[in-house]
Structure formats: structure tokens, C-alpha cells
Length: 193
Ligand code: AMP
Image 1: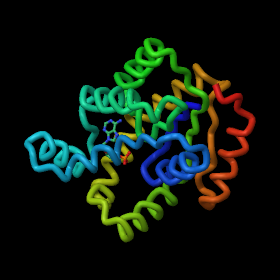
Image 2: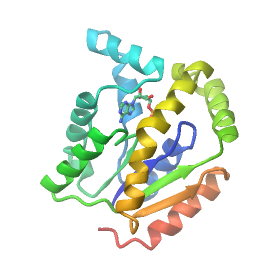
Image 3: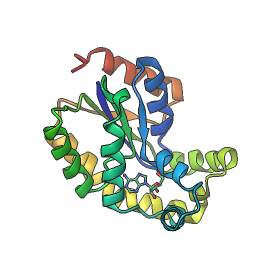
Image 4: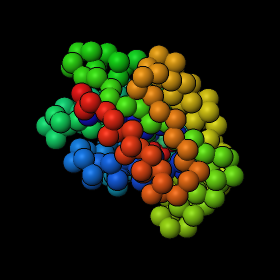
């Protein structure tokens, strides 16, 4: 089962992907998490990455495509995986399409988490207070939301148009457990390809 989660910052993609990962025993590939782990290093590339992430902008497609390709190649992904935070741009979407064709992989379900602007702000504020994520600062959030609308929402719109049978819009204004159960209901009707 291969799942992709979309949604603006604060929609709860990571939380929901984690719950599904634990329930079904497939890895949760969060590109944001993979990048944040890399920031612990002090080499010049990590320093450059930190600057980009802390500004709320997107890291280069080349880096992301390599990260995702090498992560999917690890054997724990053989039974499926969950993409959270990828693809985020047209270049990444096209890369993923080629990668899937070359590796005989198919997207099972795409979950697009939607929530109101008011909730986006509330969720991110509370996450900043709990996790102290540098890129959750108010001024940086504006850039991240702008980047989402400019670069990533067109990608989820593309999937909704071109893969309507795999695409599900999820009401992410609800409580975590309600969102989770909406997702579970959809997965239970899935033929686990
Ligand atoms: P996230 O945890 O998914 O919100 O990602 C945090 C930050 O990591 C983003 O604001 C970007 O700077 C970077 N990032 C994560 N995934 C990607 C991606 N697919 N393409 C470019 N940058 C990314």
C-alpha cells in the first residue's frame, strides 16, 4: 500500500501519517523529518539546508528527489510506504511518476488534508509552543503557506484531476481521532495494491 499525504503546514499530515504507519506497519517517509535530522550535521550542505528550511522556502528538487529515491530503495518499503511532504513541486511530481513507472509501483491512495486558515494558524502556534520548530515562527509560516499555495496545492489539484479514483479530500478541521477514522474508513475499502 502506497499512500501520499498532502495539506498545508499544520494540517496534521505528519500526525496522521504516523498513526497509519503504526497501524499498518509501513514506513512513514516524512521529507521534512529526514531533512531536520540532517541539520544536526555541521557540514556546509547541512548549513545551507538549515538556512533554506529556516526561511520557510523549499529545498532544491535535486536534493529531495535523491533523498526520496534512496529512502524508497530501502527494503522496509517493500510492502509499501507513506509519503508525507513529497512531492511538493512539479519537478518532484514528474520525478515520482518516472520513478514509479521504472520500479513498477502504483499509488494506492492520496489523502489531501484541508483546513481553514484560522485553524492553520492555531495549529502551528500550538506546535511551535510544544516542539519549538524554528520554521513554525509566525513570519516564516507566511512564507511556508505561500509556498504551499504557489507550488504544492497545484500538485494535489493535479492528482485530484488525473487520479480521481485514488484521491480523497479529508476534512482536517476535525479532532485528530476523527480525521484518523475518516482515513481508516477509506483505506479499509482499498484493495491494497
Ligand atoms: P515539513 O515538515 O514537511 O513541513 O517540511 C519542513 C521543511 O522542509 C519545508 O518547509 C521545506 O523547507 C523542507 N522540505 C520538506 N519536504 C520538501 C520537499 N518535498 N521539497 C522541498 N523542500 C522540502
